[in-house]
Length: 341
Image (cartoon, rainbow, N blue to C red; front, side):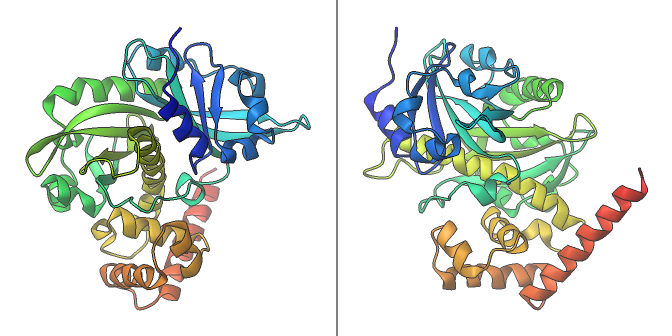
């Protein structure tokens, strides 16, 4: 029986994310981070050796065999987890292959409370500037509806991409994989992750594509992360993989904020970068500059500089004006939804 590397076990234990490492397909827990232990309410040492399903309520998603076979590199799960007091707590999870050999023998699972968006719950990393993350949404005709300004890093202008086929973002060799992943996601009503071939300024690059089905099918939201730089000195490949997975989850959740912002009467939303969108979403959810700076490892002055650029792009004069417009839109959408039922 294969065993995980010591580096992988160490990376999971030291992760700032709520992370589990478990065996595939047996689901035996092999390593646990302190954040995951806290969510479970069980000491890490008491979780190791147990089966993941011992703590879960209801049937599994059935997607793990697809990860083991290499069809998917990861998937989203919404499960209820049983704490020591017997209470069931809804959690969201992303399961990701942690093994490049086939069949996959190990998987990583990142957890967070079901009532929290990933971007507000999972901590950022001080080196998140490495690589490119593009966030967007795609309609039922497979056309890009919204996309973050980061698409410029792939060599395309946002205005060129919006309204065009989403497949222009990938190499033609990945088209079938994207369609298959979307079919799986839609059939299971859960997010999935696959590796795709992309281009950064005309140069081939591997990217992680996370997509989540939306209504009406086959529309979806997505985040695509292209690693642009080598692993930092002193950081193992396994540690880097965990940080990239967390960053991709945050970006995928930001697609929801992008959708809501674009329904306000503020222009220029498509000019926001993923970083600016992250800061804006945190601000609109109630966080203030000191908390945002601490969460994403930036100085308060840097956060304020980002916000100044956001205000300029959105054509608002202040933080309060942006918040008021956002609240008006959220209330209008709520009333529209109520009146249609």
